[in-house]
Image (cartoon, rainbow, N blue to C red; front, side, top):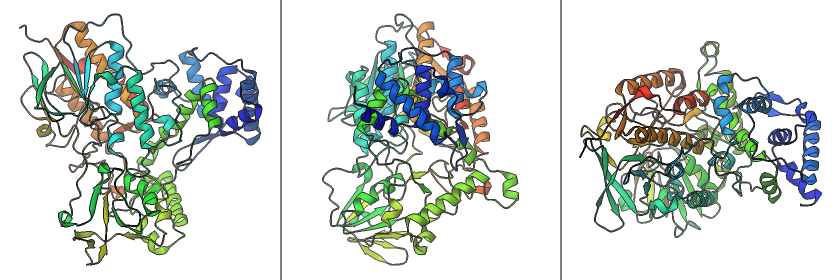
Length: 635
């Protein structure tokens, strides 16, 4: 046991609300239960605070408890009613039963909260297999689920390593923009993240660890590009065309295909006239490698989304000069502890204090439960002279103040940086000293559109030419191209891309499409809800469980295929669009401009418009009446 001073430092670094909940759950101490936590309204979301004296009491009791060493058994799982009461205590408010279903699961007290559990011996016939396309967070989650069920599967990964977006992006200072504690699978507990917001290399190492530990790694075929997949309706199987390394393409047959290529899989090209004539180096952020040298160079960064914002500070610290080309200003906000390391003392507490990991994970995400309020316009507020709503307008005021503070109130920068649309209309971006970097003498912000690239410069529409040695294209991904570049041909011989040419990509619950039996997708159209309380990996587990249940239904009943019914698909997407129309993404009052949330047909294409609890209820189990099941023909 560490000495008392070490334990005190560990406890002082802990989130006091998570510590309060863990301590009460472990000890049942009524004095801890009597602490009056208060819910405080914030600009983005509410927080729960306790008075300083009560915080000192909690920390003191936690130190004594840890030093005593008689720790509670974490294997004990509270009852559903007990968990509900604990959640109400943690959130310092009364919650209705319908608001607690997902919340109880997020705490992850059982080891496999979101997984379908195996029921005896698998009923899969010999040769039955599932093909998974992609070995990022989605593909690995699906692999873990199938491995637990004893269903044979193969993951085809076109790169030479796992990681997906966390393999392809290695540019300077790339990291998660949500807390590491919420960006992890629920079944891999107490992973020792070294930073509050993990860097790319650590996230990729985490995925590698999970894949090896849970029996997935040996099922991955690397350097394997699935270029096409076609469904044979008579035998109910998919034929995949797979190119492995430099070999000739081969055909692989699978009963089920899970497309796990993700949303951020296809980089957007830098489509600027003259780029091919540039004598320096142009590098897309997805093509970054260790040989790229920006020290002492004149650098142009094109783009100010999450990628451009993350890398500027690092590049500007070493480059001779940096010109940032901004097309549209973003709302860029700070994050507490962004870039900070998790201390050794707190690491010890996370590993040692019973239930702290669970509550820390829960509290890391629960603030986002109420984010949806920021996305709904208040008509009365607007009629009284407001822009969107009281909370959204207050957030705007706060962010404008933050911009002014970060750029030392320089009028020339403030004018260029403050957006003319409401916060949350576009994807929020986390500040990595981007605003502050713009105040460097060596950094220039340019908002005049780029006209062309010459052999040695970037030329803007006003005729100005800025000499450049290195162009960094932080222009993002072709997010409208779901499942790209694999061509999927369904039962009627129609390409999925052709189906989606009508109104853009649509799916039932983001996972299934009529006419494409036994094809499931992860992180498909309208997947992650706009406000959820849970990180993406937990949603991936939820969707994998849903898919696994459909596979088990086929196996248990001898069916060869299942497909979403057209009526269920249409009804779902009608309701989705109706609900999305309430949000400021599509609202006429929001001055919405083009962003990847909304496609060219004016439909929300990335997120699910419901709150997490409601959407989770839809995704927990497939509704039997929504699907058609068929037997394969006898051969």
